Image (tube, rainbow, N blue to C red):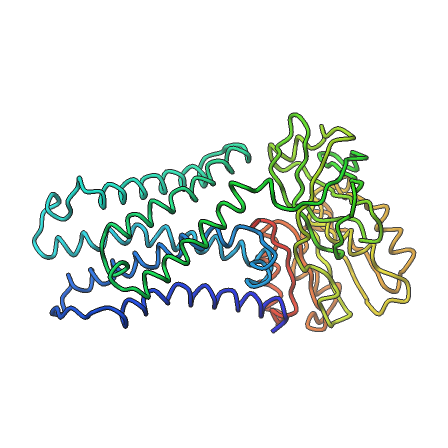
Length: 434
């Protein structure tokens, strides 16, 4: 197992343990109430377990999305951390709904009517209904509505303000969370950390340390593509080729929220370059960025670099704008290097292959180290397992680095595994999780 996957597994194991601890504290630290085994009893137990899991899962959401270096390192990198954040969000959603549903089933099985299941006008029930209602509304808005990124972020931040309401609901229930002191301490700590994380990122986010830069060039290397060149104001950010940073700019008409972009420079100078493809409302405005505008970088993040692979024979596969980290990697390759790299650059149209001339020049300069294959959809189709096998033969002797659209990553990863390439030989950059 490579280092990145080991850290990802560690992160998943930590989350699982954190979700199980409250159930164990509840089962082994609470006074046992003798009740005959029945469907109503099982529904009640599962409903209470869902409540414990939901409050811990909900508290973990802002922790996993705060982008703090310590959290990112513990949970296996920024992409793994955000992946866990999405999974935890789903767990929180299902368990928050499962809690009242299962308790209602318990009441029905005991012969109660809808009006008798709960005291509907109590603070306990009102707080629960309000929390579930707001939570569900925000979920629908953030998942299904087509709104601008900045407004989406604003709605998404409401999730943090629901957490105190959920904690209040748990306390006024006067259940085992209150009666079981170890359980109360544990839940309170997780809740407190969740609120700290929420305030750190969403309320006081502008106070987070960032690297100040100024925009010194705005170029158009291809249609619907903008290259932004930044000059540091003070100490420049240090990073490795293949990494990325969150970029925010101060310019009228452009979203001030930070967005993740890969460095395209080789980390060998103070200037930093990003290549940004127009993929949405916010990226479309980057072409209007004014030279002299202030910019801020947060990071760096990611470990998508050939140095993390012991195998010197590597295949790089780029889909569209997924070429950006490979630009940084290719620019960092040196003559007399031990690496042997072949880049498959997939693009819908040849005119959209940004920096193709430079990549060809790198190939010409170090032909024994770097080889470029352009895959055009209209000429040779897509980068497929069949194409790779035709070009390379046995694939098991290579390590693969892939960056591109999520469907492309899924298909190629699945195909390579079927071709007996170990999953430890496959490295991906999955911006869709960010």
